[in-house]
Length: 101
Length: 166
Image (cartoon, rainbow over all chains, first blue to last red):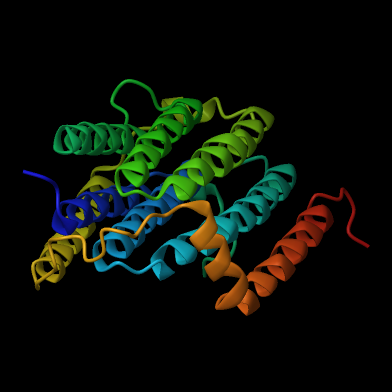
């Protein structure tokens, strides 16, 4: 049986849930960031599949923009993490509680 | 053939994605990054199966090539030995699992709402030419805005990585 839109969407949903679990579960800022990338990729897969099965290229253009924005986001986020590490010597969310009341 | 490839790529992507999030053998961020590279490569395979050839190439060139190398640089830069000693908290495990399962149930309901199962237009190919034509006609303004966004991100990164902010 050739895979339909549903198959791709199920894979995309599972990957998204995995990424969300990572964001909630892991305590390392860098791994949290990687889980965010996983979620973005899952959304990309859903967009490409929808684009293929509805005969519309708009989804693929959207993926193009998502990839660009993700690259910019990674650059800024990693620069923030490095700046944070320089000041606090840690990349763990548990050690960053100075905004807590 | 295509179905077999789909199942192989999807299974490998899911397994590698799981190993990014919760690797039972190693808590090292470098291992996570490597498995994320593998996940991205299998996703590029899925893109090719969906006839999105240009995006498959972009996925490998930009994600696996540029973004993950940046990640690895930063991981090596910040010496993260302490990570390997930390354990998962049971509450975190429970909460993360509960959130993911709830979202999975929600998405399952949304997916089974009713989707067309056949490719509508057989002529739809994600080749470079139609994609580029669309990008420079209907999506010209977003394209220009994204270029400004990249410039802003670049300036921001340069500013953030300066030693002393004046």
